[in-house]
Image 1: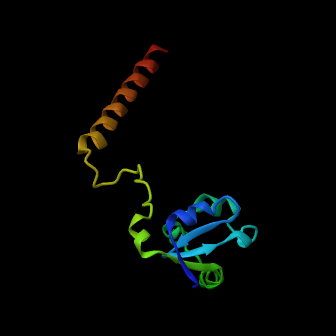
Image 2 (image 1 turned 60 degrees about the vertical axis):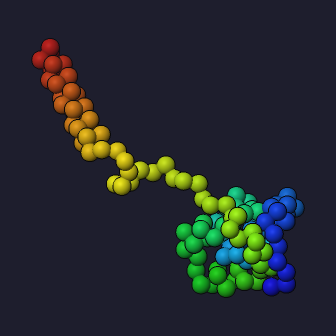
Image 3 (image 1 turned 90 degrees about the vertical axis):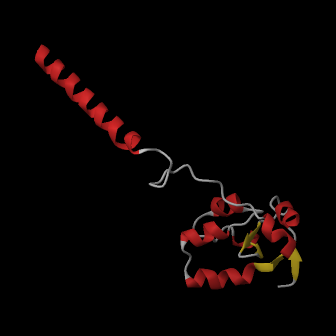
Length: 126
């Protein structure tokens, strides 16, 4: 690893070259764009930022991890590490959400009863 890069420098490289960050290391993936099995667009979406979480979520093979080492051009400057963009909060609700039990059970149950009554009234009219 030859040098340390700051986040602003990495973001500037996204127009002509494709640089991104994985585990605080800076990668120049410009020559790898056409070879990437997931397609060029996947890499372009991550250009200029920290792609560590997305890289790990995909579950890259050992061979892919070894090959990635050939594209390292430097390391992220230690002062910029705390500034890395965090992924946006997801909109998926979980069991630990603040909604109460009645919004999860009572409302659907009442809706089901109402639909059943409407169906019964409709069938009686025939």
